[in-house]
Every structure is written in C-alpha cells, then in structure tokens.
Image 1 (spheres, rainbow, N blue to C red):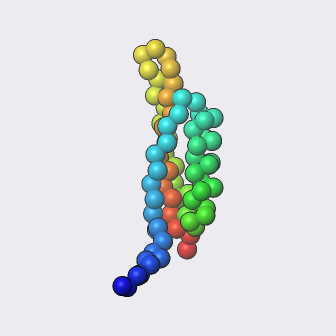
Image 2: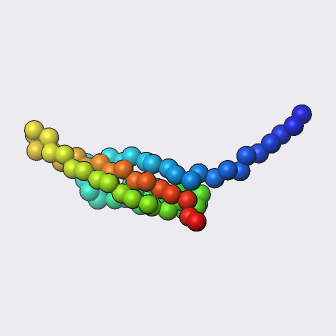
Image 3: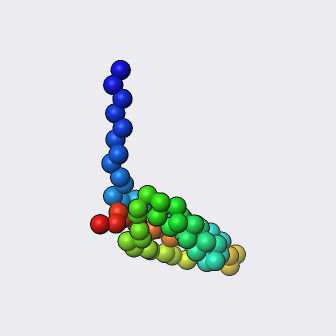
Amino acid sequence: MDFQLDLNLFEDKIEFFEAESIKKLEEKIQSQIEINKAILLHVHSVSHQMFVSEEGRRFYSAVVHFKAKK
C-alpha cells in the first residue's frame, strides 16, 4: 500500500464574519488572524459593511482575504 502526503499550502483563503457589534466582529476577525498565522497566511484585504434593520438594530459583516506569505 502506498501512502502519499500532499503538503501543498493554502495560497488564498476568504472568510466571512458577522456580528451584532463592531467589537464582536473585530474579536472574531482577530481570533481567525491568529489561527491563520499558524498556516502562514496574512491579511491581504478586508471589506466590511453595516446594515440597520427597520427596528434600528445594527448588523456588521466583513469579508477577509488571507494570502500566503511570500
């Protein structure tokens, strides 16, 4: 039996985050940044939005693009 291990690293990774406060959103993103450092990814870009519902509640979302360090 042949066993092969493919050690190709991620080159790009896009993650989506959402929260009801900007502080919680920042905490979620920062936590994931630390995790992705372990697989040698850094933040390439961040895009974020805020939505206000009809009831006046704010909702925050973000897309973070991670790229491999070169």
